[in-house]
Image (cartoon, rainbow, N blue to C red; front, side, top):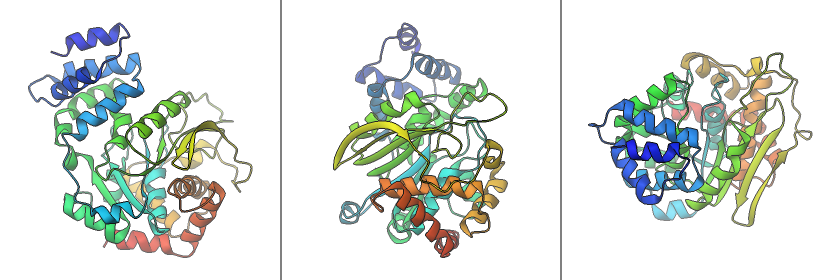
Length: 351
């Protein structure tokens, strides 16, 4: 039943809203073989997902999601932040976004972290949080309460998106073939908390502007989509980091409700970065990455891994409106760690 859509995509023809909703129904249908779903997802990726297609998929999947019982007055009184990499860079770094998210929560920002177990890496956000002792299986009511009372909650995608159960085998097939899918983009867009502020990392510069425009379309008030180069390495590296990089040039597409959309390179001259290579940012399995996160949050690791967290957490704090610039965000992130607040937040979340 997906074959006509695959044929259309192979002809480089964009799907309209009705076709996207039909495709989502088929992808969520347990009777459709995983191989057929994978063929469709690969055809869509090879054509290149348009902003309209990505937004349409997000809207269709939101309709199938489990609602979150957040108090409306609480929601409207603050920015709700998510900081997330879409995956797909295949560079093996530690969980930079997840570590940065805990720093932001400790700095006083409400962080709604939406994620899953690893698909294209050794350790996804759910994996490392679980290894840190933080519950990832919160019910919608528990997650809402944690966000409101602790400034942090993890929203485990399968708990809020039951349709994912029947899509996961197809995604696994795609991953085994080295093919990322539209779900790498959709993860950040399907956060049940509907964040008003988002820092999203993508693995290629040409994805920044389209995804930023999708965020705007979906109602995000403050957004930054980034990718960072890995320069001066001995071996050729084709992908960029799906984070802000301390290793080379960064490309940023951003928008805020008080000013319009801009796209530019981010200069790092003002940041006190230590010399580093990709090897300095590498992680491992969830247990290795959890230990890296613990060392950074308690101030024991003051090397390049800490710099990567300060840069990304600092940008997230700026996106959330907590600071007036990225460098102020860096400084607040450093103060949050050095004062023991980040370690205290981790202890609170793991209790």
